[in-house]
Length: 284
Image (cartoon, rainbow, N blue to C red; front, side, top):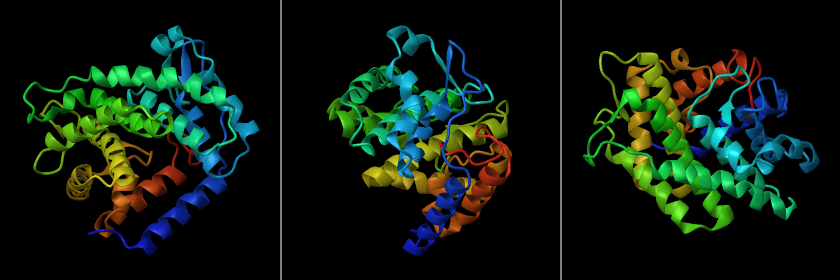
């Protein structure tokens, strides 16, 4: 069942209010010569809420000036210093989104961001799920799967900026893999007794967020159905707020009134509890 438009407008206002209460900003708390913070992706919500280009330009600058060495050696961390494989794709996803909202951006921005997109395209092309095309993805490889999901979403968005059709096909192929390998109960990853449940749930939520975002942006029925199945799995079987204080999976839970309690739970955690974004909700 699809959520009524009025319900979605209600949640949009909640998110807008949260961003207004803690306007998007960037604080380089954990950066070194070898790291870039994923919170630099706050350029996307900043431009979405009208922050001037002159304010956000310093936040995106390290991505615009990175050398080929930086692309290969620089780790993407959050402000607490945590490294998560999905962060590179999340950061690269935010950059072209911000670019699309900034028609007056210097032309060099687009050229300078392209090597980052090419790097995640190369990473996604090397994503190697089980040889059996219908075999489920193991939970032990969940971190790698989250990176693939967010790299794919970033490529989908980048295609609209760079008009490189091969990236769009690569992204679509990855999301179709997630849908095809999904378990009957909705899980994207098959867990064993050796897998930590909360780590497994976290990876499921990170993948779900990317799949749901792609499904909504493209209207593709296959990932949209996969989104509904995974959201129902979380509603019946997991406790997302035990896995993370970040609102991973939120767009999926907004799509169906039956899963709105999980959306409420995640929004509460993101706005009231410390997470990677600190005590206040982080735009990224």
